[in-house]
Image (cartoon, rainbow, N blue to C red; front, top):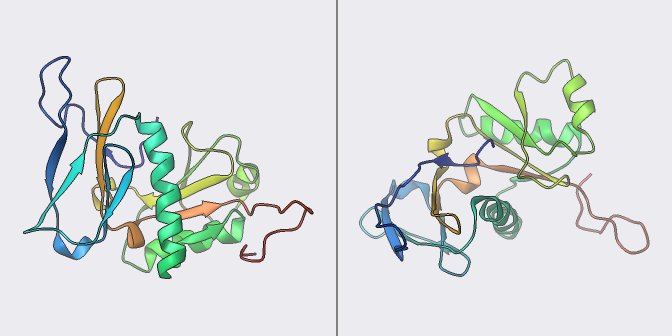
Amino acid sequence: MNHLLVMIPDLIPHKAGQIPLAAEFPVDVLTAPYLVTGSAQMVWVEDSVGGVVRAGVRRSNLIRTYKDILVRVAARGKRDGWENVFPMTVKGIKAAVQHLFSYGIPEVEILLSGGCPILGRLQEEDDLEHRVVVTDWLRKDQGVVVPIDRNFLGVASSIGEKHCIGIIHNPSRGMAVIELARKSRKGKAPPNARS
C-alpha cells in the first residue's frame, strides 16, 4: 500500500491489549490548520499550543482514515478557497500538480485507484513527468497529488488492528484532491462541478 502520510509503526508505545487515548505531536506553527484524528472523527485544529497539537486515537483503520482525510480536506478547501480540489481529467490532474509546484514542492506523486476512469489516458501522456502510483485504498472516483516527501503532510500510525492516530499539516499546500464530477439525477453534472 502506498501511504498518504508518513507511516510510523508503533508511534505510541503501549502495552499489548491497552489502547492509548491520545498523543501530542510537535508541529511548525506555520503549517496550520491541522487535521487530526479524534476518537470518533477527524477534527480540525486551527492553531497549535506552544508548537504542539494533540490527536486522539481513532477506532478505524488507516484506509478508512485516509479516505476521510481526502473528503475533509476537499470540503475545507472548497469552503475556504484553497483551490486545492481538481476535476478528474488529464487537464485537472496537471493543474493539481501545478498547485503543489506553486508552493515550492518540486517532487510529487499522483495517487490513483487502479479503477480510475482516466488512468490509461494519464499514463499515455508524453508531457506528464510525474510518477503515477496505483494504490488500493483510493476509490475509483478520487485521487490525490502529494509530495514524494510525505513529511510535508504529516504522520500516521496503526495501533493494533482496529485503531490509528494521525496528524495532517499543510493540507492546503501539500495535498491536491482529484474528484470525478458527480452526475445529478437527470444525468447532468451539478452546477458546482468544475470542467
